Amino acid sequence: MSSDNLLIKVKQLREITGVGFKDCKNAIDETKGDIEKSIELLRKKGIAKASKRMGRVAAEGLVCIYEQGNSFSMIEINSETDFVAKNSDFINFAEEVSKLALIKAGKMNDILISEMNNKKNVQDNLISLISKIGEKITLRRSDFIKSEKCINFSYTHSAVKTNIGQIGVLLSLETTKNKEELSVFGKQLAMHIAASSPLGIDKSDLNQNMVEKEKEIITEELKNSGKDTKIVEKIAIGKLNKFVSDNTLLNQEWIMEPKKKVKDILKEIAGKDKIVVKKFTRFKVGEGV
Image (cartoon, rainbow, N blue to C red; front, side, top):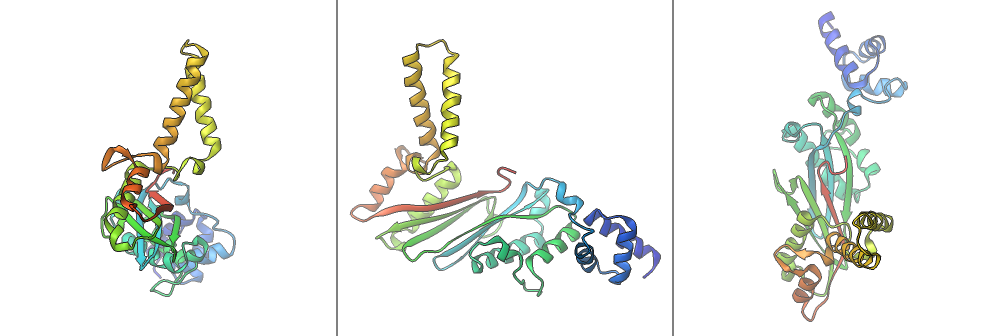
């Protein structure tokens, strides 16, 4: 290897791993210039603990859904910039990983060690992608639904390709109806979840610490208003009830017909049959990062 090529390889390896020049040069020499093997070697020696890039914020990216029959997987993969999220290598990687997520029932640890089409595992391919693209890329989270007792649906918002976009929703409905009867409504309800971002199905699903904190904030805010204590208590109850309604799926206003609640629409659609929301998951790219 020429001295120029050696320096280029060492520079690349230093940028990826944050390891010093000497250790990087030794690794490049030992692996005959193979960047991926050099990263692996440094990690095995305990020298490369984390990439410099791993300290950056990755809040862009994609949500990918893969479906097979009544089984669905969903992953969120993040990058630093929207530009990279549109990169074909990034999208192809995300698509293949979403398929593996279905096979591995959404278990992230199992996904990361799964073999991809090139015979390397997901974790190693992720490192290679970081090296090639030059940005921090992370597999942030995954989910999976499969049930013989439920009919499952999915929805992807701001799609760049089928089942790949900025927001993804998985939805499970327990019902005595068949999927054909619910195909339109199931998709609409998943769209509603994407748009309205509920935190739970009903009041009992909300984090009680969060509810208590909201109650505390509302009460303190009203105390400073100078209103009578009894009036403050009534207003506080009303505001808290609105908070619960706004953040629970069944109590939200139905986006297709805001005068009705989601629970009212469920009753209408069900008729003499039964429709129960058993589970939903909503991923929005970068949310909470």
